[in-house]
Image (tube, rainbow, N blue to C red; front, side, top):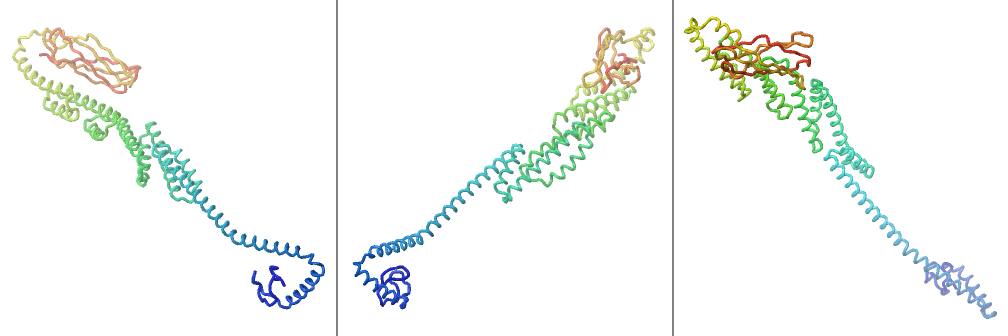
Length: 413
């Protein structure tokens, strides 16, 4: 008889199939045995014409059993291989993505350090598209955006400075510095030098605007002290302008003191000015002039007392009232609106003159008074028939201004 499960031939007394292990139903087996017996008898009588077909059936059943075995064996292996291949592909893909993200991150860092924040921001956005959950990329992008925002504020301050609205610029700068205190990192380092430059420009600009209103040495000296720590070219130019004004004011005060024969006061004024304008040639010459003037004055006083009765009245009058002749006098305004003038005089007296002072008045195009001042003639001593020169300048005078000499004073030797 045959197994009803796999079709393999089994013994009549078998309870389980020796091939597939299936339990044998005895009742069915008996029937099947009888049927098989009948078939056997029929086969014998017909000389077994169905035997080849039976072998084909058994062959097919064995083939099915073999295919099932191979499928059951290799399907898990193939599945495992596919899963491993997928995992390897995923791992390699993720490594490539990481490399690409790292490249974008390095590119962004390099661009940011070079000040190309637009490129840096674009690189970080590309990196975030690949790794949206990578928190560091988001933080880097926030830093770039913050730097860009700071630079926009800095540009606004610079535009305000260019408009010479220094007070507004100073307020904006103060607010900006408070924000910058919380910004730490290499991306923010380039901002600090720019900040220092703007601070210097604002300080210098404010002082320059106030300069015309400062008329005392103390006020000018205070501004000079403010500029002392600044090293920009613009600061140096304003320092020089302040020093020139200190020299001018001090020379004027000293001249007034000399006119009143207050030689000690004049010397003190010039020494104070020299503390700010060290080695200034005009001040040193003026200091020498004070000593000479004091000596000359004292000597002249003594001589006048001794020779007063001996000098002819007309000659004395001429020497005192007409000893100076103006040979030339010219003026011009430079590109900054400063008024410069110079001239030459001649001693037409019969004696040596000294401390020649030119008093002048400046008028605008309509003849209205602008200012008046005086300047000294060099050299200090001018012999009979010899010449001397003078020059001076005034800040911020209109283009059509004119100058007139009001008076010339001198001392006789």
